[in-house]
Image (cartoon, rainbow, N blue to C red):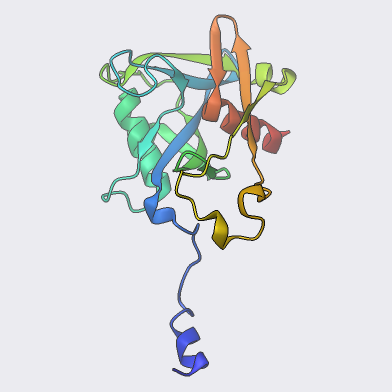
Length: 204
């Protein structure tokens, strides 16, 4: 086959993360809301009945469904469902960087504003409670950071004889940074804290 004809198949292709079809894809919204003349960040406490991460602090969000036309649609839909508000209550939505997690997830993040007059009706099957933290707290307080080291362990029948260096191959193990914000009795950590730190870095 002629190389030009082969490359013709690529002209309308949009690059993606290689292997992304095997990743779980989610989208979240970092909600901002005005309270007492000050901008606050809104958080959820996950229901204690959930199978994954019960009781942890997070932003509204969830898995991307086939019905969602864009990642932003997912973030908005999940926020509406979890907080019991309307689409009209959310405005000024802008994308943040997305995260490719070493645990097989891609998380698309957005920041947006929620109408301060809106009454919330959290979905009890997903949300235990909601609370807000003044944005100024995060602007003034750096997160604490800890490291998680990954250990590389090839399976027993790994073909060392096929690679240069064999069993002495110099694997490049990596580590990830875990962020922690502690506000009163609330611990905000993990991907939620990482996305929040990224947002703070942008608006600074």
